[in-house]
Picture (cartoon, rainbow, N blue to C red):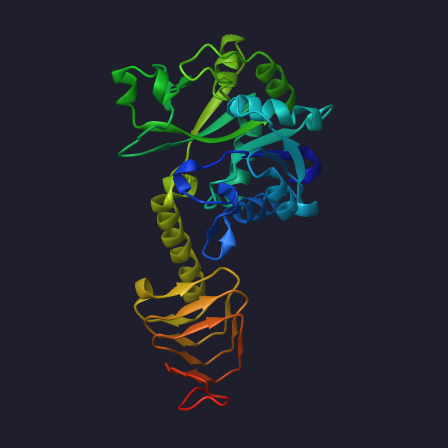
Length: 328
């Protein structure tokens, strides 16, 4: 799967009022890294090295952050997700491959997931594929309606849904894969005749279905991947789940982690085999720990290199030039 046949549009123009942050939502850190950086890394892993990032609120900061790693499309007015994709269309002119559309506030989606969406769209021959998930509490997600054959028949935004439709537990993740020409055609026909008065990207699915084009809904087995961050509670949940992934990766490579729920490890940290991480340890930034070490308990290391066979024990230094006690 080559990047020349796949492009991506990342929706990153929102203000994120519920985050109560002074920075653009997609630049808020998740385990020490901006949440947008996880999205860009996963897209790159899927073979999409230079996605189109749609910016709006704080767009100059987002542009500065992505630098040469993405193209930028401006959404100067916030008129909905469909309008955001319309703003990116000039950069998709003459492209006839796959277009992944995803959100900049979903840092847990893996590169493997993006690859799967593209592969399933191609294999099915569908003009569009929408990733769905089942939630016990669907909240305000758009609901997925299927016909008697189990095929996608509509996506209904929560604000436009009836009580019966709100009872549906299968929901839209906000992540799609389109055939490029079909996306251009469907987006050009969007209207604002809805409760919000916005251009809904979900209406592209309705436009394709009404034109008799094949559209597929892919029910993804892991709803955690599509966790969107809208407020500090979501951020804490994402950090916990991402942290679990990181710790599992280290455990699988021979690192011993005691009481993992008390340990915080950021994604750039490297740890050698047979090293023991004791309770209450925090490992940040580009910290590198050798093999056969003992770290902790209750030690914080930030951007530091630890040699093989070292023991870093808890200590408290005030105004000392030379560490006292069994530091190494």
